[in-house]
Image (cartoon, rainbow, N blue to C red; front, side, top):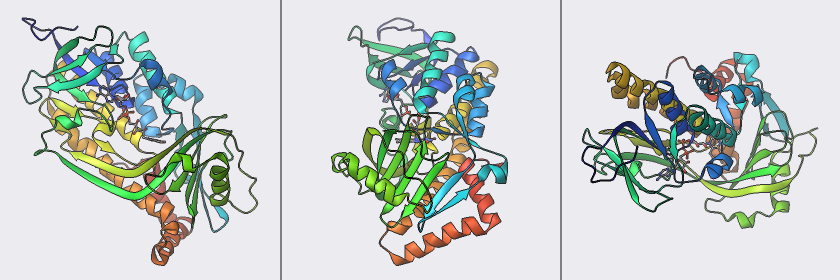
Length: 404
Ligand code: FAD
């Protein structure tokens, strides 16, 4: 329910969720399932968020979490199960059969499909309130017990105010809620890799049944199946590079070179339907909470797509925050909210460390430094000669540690 700033006794919502990505939509669904009222505010249109291509790799625990809350029916029916990945270096292929080692697998389900499922469930099935196309979203009075969020309505152009008890900042890396943390309280720990990735989507079937990592002296190349018709590719490039420097022929020539392996058929080529440069960096914002504001997902921590972890962490936060808010509203129990940041950050920092480790495996051979090339080769060899190293890698790659 919306009120203007001058209303005498504003209705107070339990929770306002800023941002309808995987974190915000999962949180919204879980709150509605527990009869905790909320409103989701989103700057983009429904069509736009349902089409935005990004992630695809989901860890098994995250899918089981969605399944427990009735949010994984389509995913379980349509996602592909991946049981291995393959490193290509020195012109050879080295398959890493993580399912054989652990009994676990990854699910591959494009992020737009997951977002579409989550919006449909929240808005159409569970009757949740979600407002698309809102402008100039601002949180207020977060350090009081009466916070609010204001925004401009796309229909009327008027300012609206939602009074609430808690604000969930799920508005991603470019949102506004993180900026509401007072600068003297917030610490942004940031790591820049000093490299770029040209992120590509090709209208072409995958050229292998699994993810391929090309660790090549010319730079990293990745092949990530997304669906029978579409494949994501990555090419290491200078940070800030212009995607226009990468015409069709150059892209496919580099991919063929960097992913080459003896005896393998050539890549299946296709039209490039997305081509953009990502400057690879990570950050973690601490604290993730301020007064009545709780950050979740990319708003609080970004992990470069090196190990395909970001969406998984967004879902992890949504599960934790939903449990904590539901306990607070249904039992008056504040302990989940008090421990939210600590519980989130244990997995976040673990995944950040793994991404750094894996980054060196991907990029060391192209660093132009004989020492780094040597240690990178040693890391790769160890994966395929030491069962202990292989087990440790599988655990981190799948996110299956018993405790974080
Ligand atoms: P987002 O998905 O960014 O959602 C935030 C939402 O908030 C958006 O809809 C945005 O429009 C909205 N918003 C922004 N500002 C405002 C505002 N002021 N008010 C209201 N709404 C606002 N992760 C994986 O786990 N596996 C992968 O395979 C993987 N691959 C990736 C590949 C690429 C090329 C990229 C770029 C990322 C990849 N990731 C991957 C990361 C993953 O996409 C993100 O971590 C994930 O989208 C984070 O979800 P989120 O809900 O926190 O934020």
